[in-house]
Image 1 (cartoon, rainbow, N blue to C red):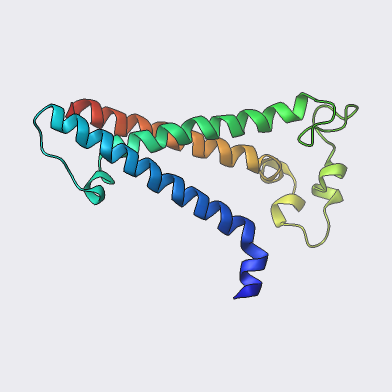
Image 2 (image 1 turned 60 degrees about the horizontal axis):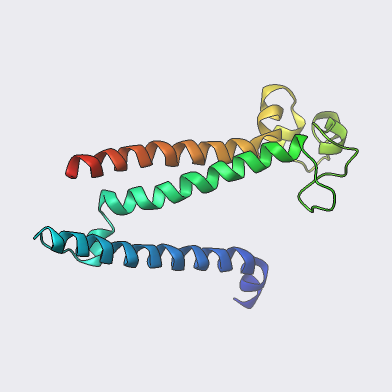
Length: 157
């Protein structure tokens, strides 16, 4: 167990931090929801019921949407833009796309590299851009889901 914790402590830390902020957001949101309901002479709801409301979903997804958009922009911007002294920036003389050799894909891939890094073509291009694609997919998924929960919240009001 201690080996598991040692090898995964960063992931566990951020998972716990994520869970704590989600719980805190739900508690604050519940109090705001119930306060507004009381002002309009409506019934208040429990915390577990609040977790299933479109209002909570819209609030969470609105936050996720902005964060994943920032990740997408940072990922794209660090390919072309440079900042002297920044650990996120490439050295000043290496702006732009990297060569296949520096990325260790296609002919430069190591024998133990993932198959998609070695095969070439569209699959290697997807592999090379997998971080950006994952961020963009999460952004657009949270955007679409936030739109649905926001629409539901609007219809409820």
